[in-house]
Length: 102
Image (tube, rainbow, N blue to C red; front, side, top):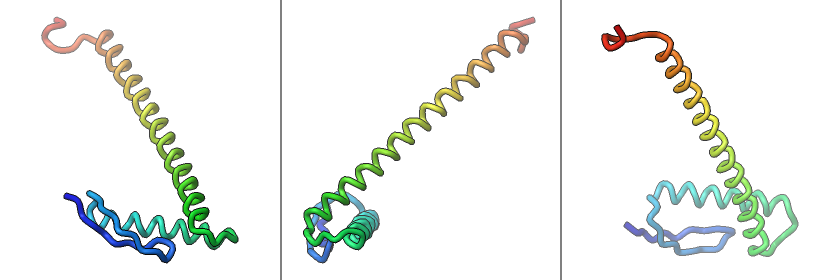
């Protein structure tokens, strides 16, 4: 269900329509505000557009890094699972088990 939120980013109010739950939306806004404030304090920019674009680029870079790490971890888990499956298959071929093998 879509909800409408009024949020403040860089001292400017925005009205946002979203399907996000209120708690998650609040966490998102806090994260973005913290990021914008961090960039604003580190650089001499006063233009909100430049600050917002830098934040978007930095957040996107971090997101892509996490996504790549997730894909690498998934691949590692898949490889280890396949290795274990192969070990089990080899063991079952070498050692008779159950009534059917007698």
